[in-house]
Image (cartoon, rainbow, N blue to C red; front, side, top):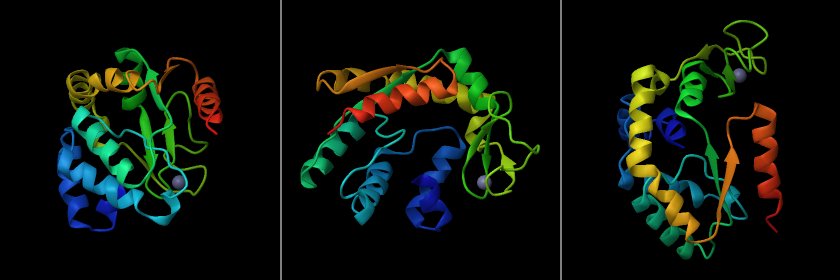
Length: 183
Ligand SMILES: [Zn+2]
């Protein structure tokens, strides 16, 4: 959502990208507003999946209020567990396509042609927030600001944990199994 708003030259997206480039969390006000705009679009009316939001308790509270206004609620929250070592390796070797946003990994999910996207032939690049320093900072922020969300959603009885240290297909399968149970 941040990247779309930025690529569309929306002022709120340009503001958000300043935080992201330094590996910082975008302020709650900007983040909540971008999410609110996105969730009000027609394609989110029946259902939606949020990835990487909310990241603070203040955002979670704001989201709950937004959803009450929309007469809906969260069905499930999926928490993917992984060690810091594994996370470092995944993020540092992650590459993203500049054409279609497909993600690759230099060891686990290599493109057929080096530096090129299998799906659209676009160029692969490393996200500015995937460098070692930025990843370190993101993990520190996770510990202090995002981890408290686990308690927040556990109390609502909608938290589900997935072992994120399995291979790609198993993590995917486990997430699908959890989502499949939603009526
Ligand atoms: Zn592509």
